[in-house]
Length: 166
Image (tube, rainbow, N blue to C red):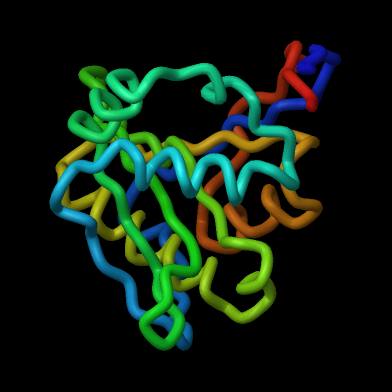
């Protein structure tokens, strides 16, 4: 059962490609060029399990597929095994949003997240936006906000919102 509770949400943005603090890592980052909603769903559920990601759990297969077709899915692999993902959502307002981002539990702490975020943000800037955005909240990993700030994102707004919990 899902309940909703007040949660601090941080909205961050990067205003120029020069702000990106690049990070290399041990993995291989690739774009998944065949939209496959089931793959997006897998990562959302598996990464999000530890962080109470519940908003999309009720989506149908058609909703997942529609999302996959209008976003870019990026994967980081560790020795050939998919270890994490990010979804880029180009918006019509001059923004590309890092809509979701996460590393599977058994791969956390290996430097894969910094590597994936670097490549995803580089790709976001290749799309020609005025800014790249991301948000995170108090339910996400303890280092999520700091992770984004280390790569060059700056806090632009903080709110308290009702977020779901399992």
